[in-house]
Image (cartoon, rainbow, N blue to C red; front, side, top):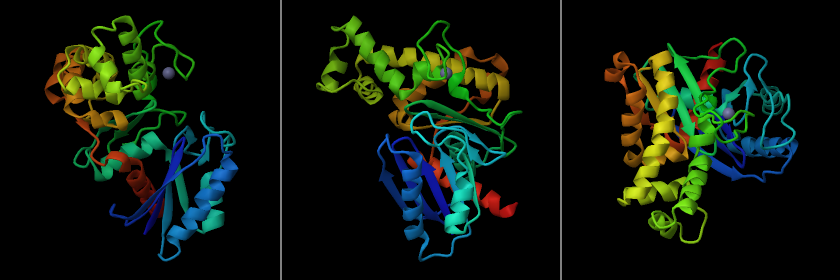
Length: 314
Ligand SMILES: [Zn+2]
């Protein structure tokens, strides 16, 4: 068995799985965003101990929602939660649970999950995007995560799309994440409707006095509302620019899109394929494949299983 851990901003998930990716048990815990890392680690270790108590577990794989130095196996920091700076989490897990452990950032781990068990299963080169609160990316070349010279490659959400565009968390302006993350889509739809309240009436109704989210926009577009569709097209043009950059640069066999926004389905993927295609060099157009993540909210957990397998083999 493998113990897989997925640590996000406001929750963590634990799973017990077989090395071939069959999940035996999967539990999710909500955590307080203000909780210090020490408190969270205690909770993760306690829950892990209970989960693995009845099984023979070989290794632990961890996906973390923030930058990780893979070479030193330390978390760099977390922009969401205090106390993670320079944290050697795998070492702590090894000490407390007696298991060899390995960690990487959750976008890389999600990419590995889709590559090993999901939508990238029969491909050699995949590019993975997770579009939710932010936009994360993972690049797999010849079956291996591409990490670059300093170990932090794959930040596909921070490709500049719009000069002088909205402020991004990374410090730049107009990044793909600042324009097309789930958060950014909700914000853009809200701003568009404030500007054109009459055109946006169907979206406002769908929101029903709650804040307008990406889901509100996609649901309204799916019902056929022309203004919602126009806004989705606009978002797909921006997202397509980011994807086209990756395709022109890497010519992947497939682009896999996960994260909450990918649940929108065809209403997102059809315009996205069209818009991406128009930015591509003609030689890349015939091979363009953009597909939703197959493992849905289990990409990271199953990627952690694949990562743990690497730890055992090395
Ligand atoms: Zn950025």
